[in-house]
Amino acid sequence: MAAAQYNITIDAQSDFSRTFAVEEPAGTPVDITGYSFTAQIREHFTQSEHTDFTTSIVDASQGLFKIVLSDTTTASMTAGKQYYDIVMTTDTGEKTRLLQGDANISWGITR
Image 1: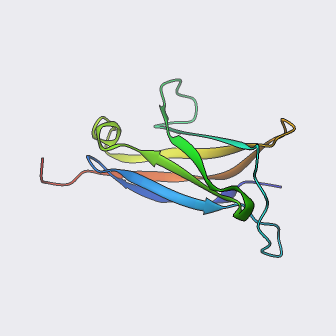
Image 2: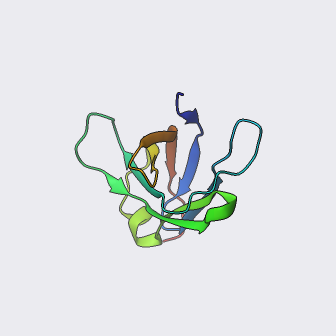
């Protein structure tokens, strides 16, 4: 199955977090006990330089997990279009790229 497309906007110099649900096609939550998640953002997919999201499971039985960037992390990011994805590793070691998309880094005026 191909990764779902989901674009995000990250306000620089602000904390960023999004919670996602892992579900079966019929909408039933997947129990993600023992699973792990990794997520990165890059200016271009061939670039070695990247920023790691902090990931955590919010409610394993309901399939909920979260990705987070701190305000200090977002303050160091370059404005404009970048790319991210999220990879899920099951308790048996199977890896699946769940989500991918554009990440628009938006700089505000107040500093």
